[in-house]
Length: 215
Image (cartoon, rainbow, N blue to C red):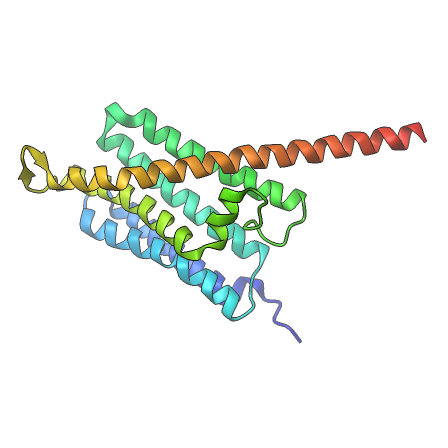
C-alpha cells in the first residue's frame, strides 16, 4: 500500500527544516548578520534537496509544491523587508521585487491548478520551459538571485575594503544584480503567461455556459 502520510514525506520534512531555518534567520537578522546569512543561505540551499527527495522517493505532492513555493516567497519577502530598512531610499525597488515575486508565482500556481497540470514546472512558454527543465539553469538563477539579496544585506553591515573608492561588497552586489534582474524578468513572464492561462480558462467557461444555455 502506498504511503499516504503526505505531511511526513521526505521532501516535506526538508521543507519544514527550511521554514525553521528561515524563521531563525529572520529572528537574528537585525543583530547577527553572519548568523542570519548562514541560516538564510542554508534554508535556500536545502531547496535543491527537497526536489531531489521528491523524485528519488516518488513523493511529489501538491502540498509539497505549495510548501516549497510559500517558503521561497516568504523568505524573499522577509529579506526584502529588511533591505527596505537598511536602504530606505531604495525601498520602492525592494517592495516591487517582493510584489513581482509573490504575485507571479501565486498566479502561476493558480493557473497550474486550473488547468490540472501535474506540476507547476510544465509550461509551453519556451523561456519558462528552459527555466524549469534545465536544472542547472534553474539552480544557478535561483542561487544567484538569493546571493544578490544576501550580499545587499551583508553590505549594510560589512561594506568591505575600498578598491579605487568602491567598497568590495558593493562590487559583489553589482556583479550579482544582473542575475536578480533577469530572475525578476522571468517572474514577469510567469505573471503574463499565467494571466493568459486564467483568461483562456474564463473564456472557455463563458463559451461553455453560453452553449449550454443555447441548447
